[in-house]
Length: 294
Image 1 (cartoon, rainbow, N blue to C red):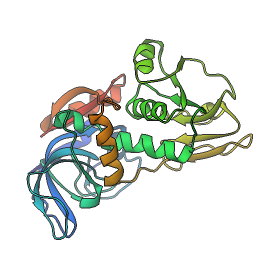
Image 2 (image 1 turned 90 degrees about the vertical axis):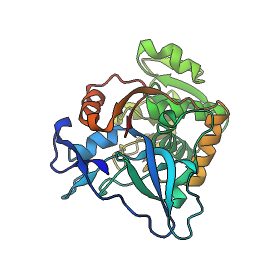
Image 3 (image 1 turned 45 degrees about the horizontal axis):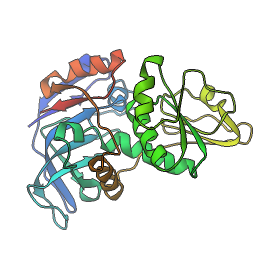
């Protein structure tokens, strides 16, 4: 099968599509024939050597597709339409491939209201958003500033927080106001108030600058694991390290089918054009996810 890998760190040209053996599922694993796999900023980080690694590295975390092989004791059947998060910064093969093997408990049934291309944008970004909100532990009526509210994680966070009864303010570019409000943000800003919010979810990776917008004793969560700023003014600070969780992913799928969560595809690329997709994402300004189609 074909798979996208990195053998030497560098720019988009460092991504290669190679021929490799089709992986076989072990106990409590399944193999998915990939229909769509989103490209995320973490893939650019792996490609550039941000996370290290000294071997050939596979790329891709998100997958939507069809189960085509099942290991022992895996509660799935060949032909099931599924989505999954394949977690791991330094893995031999990722989801940017024709087939991928994942743990059965990282899998959920695919949404029935969208196609596989859109479904492929859900796992990593939505799980990151909901797990970050769980860390913040906000209650109904409290205020949350989402920095990067028009982005993939930020957009999900706005929708999920608003559904919990949190008063959400979205921070994004002026041209994104209509979209961010359509997600359920009560307010929109390009210049947040210092100390004006019970919590900040920093999906834009602003760091200490974003911490200044948290009230005394409030909370801050970032999306780059271990890179959150230290506490100031009694504010609790943390970062989310996303975990694969099939049960939680199934809940998010349900919200897609209920129309609560919006899935956005900016553009699709053939697997052989993966380097081109990397270059496009690196350029910035993408609204929605780029999705690879093997």
